[in-house]
Each structure stands twice: as C-alpha cells, then as structure tokens.
Image (cartoon, rainbow, N blue to C red; front, side, top):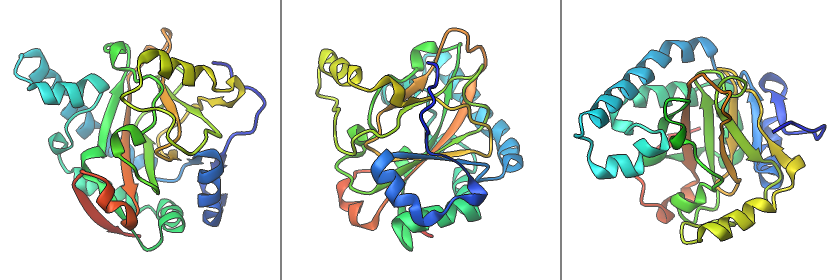
Length: 254
C-alpha cells in the first residue's frame, strides 16, 4: 500500500520525549522509535534466532512436531520460546536499553510483567507465505488487559523487499475483533479502516515499534517481497493486569 502524506508517529529515539508515551499510545495506539536499541547487538543475536527456526523446520519436516506446537506457533511463523537459546538473556539486553527502558517506565511505572508465553521471535517470508497474519488485535489472545504493549523489534529489515507490518494508526483503543467473529464480520471491521490511516513503515535493525493490544495490525506481505524477515516480540503488561492472563509472568523492574 502506498503511504499518504499523513503524519505517522515516527520518531528518532534520541529526541523522543518519554513523558508523551502514554498519550500517544492512547490516542494513536502505536509509536515507532528509530534506533532505540543496538543494531550491532541484534546482528550478533540473529544467527541464534535463525538456528532456532532451522531446528523447528526440521522437526516439522520430520513429522514429529506435536499439533499444539504447529497450531499455536509454527503456522503463525513462531518458534517455541523455550527453543531459543538464551532467550532470557536476549529479553534482558533489549529491556535494559536506556531509551527503551525510559519509554516503558514512563508508560508502566517502576515495574511491568513479561508475558513469557507471548515473547517469541517470528519469521515471515516467501518460503511460507501462508504464515502471514491477517488483521487482528493482540487482545484476542492476551485477554482483557487494560495496559500492555508489544515491543516489536525487527532483527532484519522489515518492509521493502522484506515482509513488514501494516498498522492502523489511530485505531480505536477498544476490542473490535475476537476469535469468535465469523470471517465476514472480521472483514467488515477491516473494511472500515480509513486507507490513509494504514501505515507500513520500512524498519531497520535498531528500530523499535511499540503498540497496544487494541491496535489492529497484520503482516505486510506482497508477492515482490523475496527476502525473509525475522523479528522479536516482547509483550509486557501492568501489575494491575496480572490476574487477567494465563501466561507465565516474570516481573521486570524498569
């Protein structure tokens, strides 16, 4: 989709005011911080994530992948978090990045909780185009969470020759979709998105997109995208929301 002249919440991380984080997320549902984390650190970790996908691919090809792993993870482009060597270290490194930590602290306060069941790498590309995710809200699987974010980190380029993300900037911050909705009703919701509000930025390693569970988004995939994109999703919720999820949780000081 061709971008319009609309101004989207796209900021240089080193000049972004963390105090505006909550206001922007509540009004727009998303912010993009350019070079908020170390691109060099991401380059060091990319082979680890690639290796975890290679192992999951081999398991699937052998016919030994259990059905829950396929249904809940592989068909959506995920590997199991426990299959990523050093994942806890990765999460700690990313969340210790000074700019990102300041932004999250401004939104959550002194503490937030990592949703371990929903912190996993994702792969999208031409080998498995069927893994592309249609429009959805994270609240559909996260539960009735009031304050939460998805910290979406591209491990390769996203957009251009690589599959990216398409986001409804300005999406109403409330439940609009659910797993119970039939396809025609989901399509009806999607058809009401103003075309000028759809945003599919090109992102590079070091950039971080942060959006809420209520922001409608999908995989941005087009036939001319011939490269494979890897990304990391880190979901956090507020202390007040810990009773509203079935995910395993780890407290994180901010």
